[in-house]
Length: 101
Length: 459
Image 1 (spheres, one colour):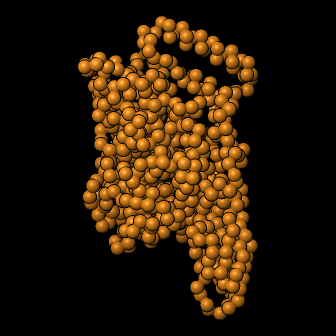
Image 2 (tube, rainbow over the protein chains, first blue to last red; image 1 turned 180 degrees about the horizontal axis):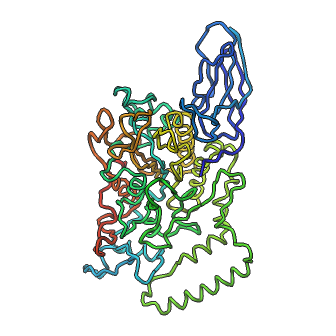
Image 3 (cartoon, one colour; image 1 turned 60 degrees about the vertical axis):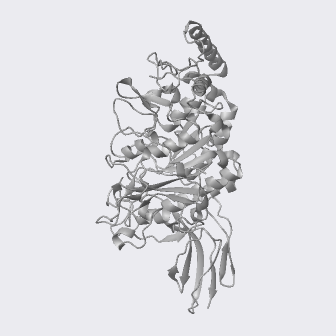
């Protein structure tokens, strides 16, 4: 029996300067929760978001930064030859925020 | 053979000194309070001494690697230490995997046992039997699940069964059907109650709590009255006048007609916020249900994290490229976060409800995993060393009992064998292991568990 994951997780995040804070996740699947940080469209960090509800990315390299909260969505265990999952993936579960340095 | 006081062991006051757990040849299906009273009179059980009244076992089917979870070796060569880093915990000197950040904050409640090992075959089933029955495989005598032992000794506390397994039985893990989760020689009355449903499902319901279609309440009452008449007739002709029948049929009827039992299984009574805190998944909701069942009077709940190791993401990290293709990615994104979230929710919730003080939560698994990564970057079965842990009741948290060598290949000090874990739980529940016996080879009585409790576990 595969683990069942009910509902669709959702959270609101807000930006205060460069610090992003999340609210509680509703319909939380309990899987990896992470911030996805992009600079000029490229992913530069994916720190864990479980322990603390607030995060500030340390980089001050000039650019446009965009942050969203993500959760792992498990579909099945199958993987490509390079080891990455085929169907299971991270999904955005929050609104996006951005700032420019 | 299930029998109390049948074997003639002379003592000065005429009561047998030892309480034997043997199922009778007549097929006696179980005894409740009178058996407990007999065991108490024989000195085999002292509930007043017990600091553990309930047990929740979380069984991590598939078995996480100890070097990637709770016994990390950051100074070992790369092919041993693996990909994860250790993090500090609330206990100075104890570190665990970075992917258990919430558990790290409550390590002062947890007693790690880092030197578990056994020497028989490295199959999932062997490990399951060792950890859930305290015995090795024996086709002539199937040993009972620990919850069935507790059911046999203490009987039910309410209309709910004393021994429940969530969400269902362990299925195919590769080497046969005996997973240590049956009542064995104790008989059907002590068979675990298997939920056989997924508590994470939106329309979750327990089929065994519903009256079969075509059976009205009137018909059910009539059948129950007939059963009571038959039981009354049996009691009058039974030579054991002090014993009361509490057959599996009566228990099933009580379960079927009890509003309290239905309420215990009703997760919709929990606030959404709490259900989210456990995780909206089969494991998390099973842990929440376990808490509700303990509240409702169940003595022993087992949560099987998985029911197989094949073709799904689970702890069995062979990375084989086929049906056992679990890797570090499964641990990092799925398994460790799911466990961290659900386990810590359970501990917090039990404590908040005042249940943790007399409930032990035992997190058990089948074995460790090979110290050196295999050719595909995974780890294989390894019973020579692994880590399990307990918390709650009078378990002294904030300690690591035993240790392994510098690459986690074998116990370095204080080696512990699986029966010692169950011996500890039984001891904590007030069972005198020197005076509670079970049938051995040729019906010769042997100790319930061939091991002593781990004294260091207890405060």
